[in-house]
Length: 120
Image (cartoon, rainbow, N blue to C red):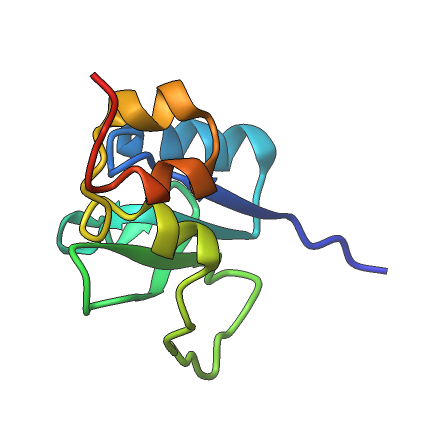
C-alpha cells in the first residue's frame, strides 16, 4: 500500500503564501491544493512540488501542486460550480448590510433581511 499525503490550504487572500514551503516540507506532502491564492503570483515550484494547474478566471483562485518525482499528472480540468447559499447571502457584492450588522444580528437570514436598514 502506498501512502498519499494531500493538504488543502486556504491562503487567506494570498496572505499566507510564505507558509507553503514549510508546510510542504514538514508534512512531506505529495499533493497540495490551494484556495484564495493570487494565481498571477504563484511559483512554478514549492519545495519538492511542481505547479500542475491554477484557475485563471478570478484574481483569487485555486492551484494544485504535486510531486513530479513520484506522479505524472496526465490531465487536469477546471470547472465552475454554483455558488453556495452561504456565498449568495453573505456576499459583499449582494449585501448592503455592514459588517457591524452581520456581527450584531448573528444570522445570515436576519442579516440579509437587514440590507435596506442596517442597525445603528
